Amino acid sequence: MEDRQRYLNLYYNATIGIFHSNLDGTFTDVNPALARMFWYESPDDMFACVTDIAKQLYANPEERESVLRQIKESGGNITMEGHYRRKDGTFWYGMLHLNPVYDHKGNPIGHWWFIEDINNRKLAERDTDLSREILQILNSPENITDSIEHIISALKIKTWFDAVS
Image (cartoon, rainbow, N blue to C red; front, side):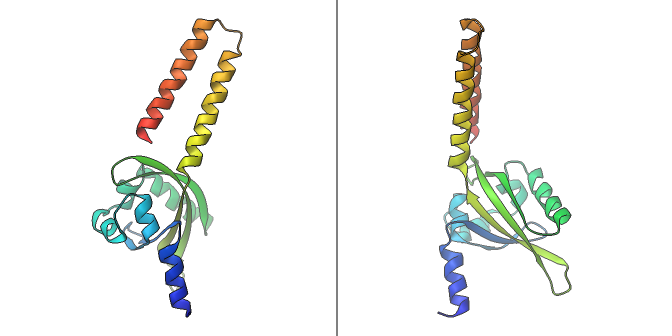
């Protein structure tokens, strides 16, 4: 198998989302896994619908600017957790690996983005933290009324989080 075909097989069959963007925040390439993560029918659907990566894919559009500042300051690759928005508006967590792309003169011209879906892990961590908090409340010397109020408050936060996740 020639190198180009090997690369294309890896790119199109990867389980992580991969895309390339220009510095202005528009796509130049999207793999099928990325389209699925963001709940688009295909890479073509994602290309047609997403005109502003920051506003449409980030839960908080300012987060993209923060990511770009970090890569500029580090001068190289970065890895960080992010909070993203799917096509239907629901949110999810991903682990972002970002690599800058330079022209032959060393000027930045874009970025390769690699995203892993870590939503299930983040939700499990949140549930574990909530369970610990409830156990701590139940084992505290406070009166039972205060303990119940704390638990109800914690569960309301979990319910709100589930609604926005």
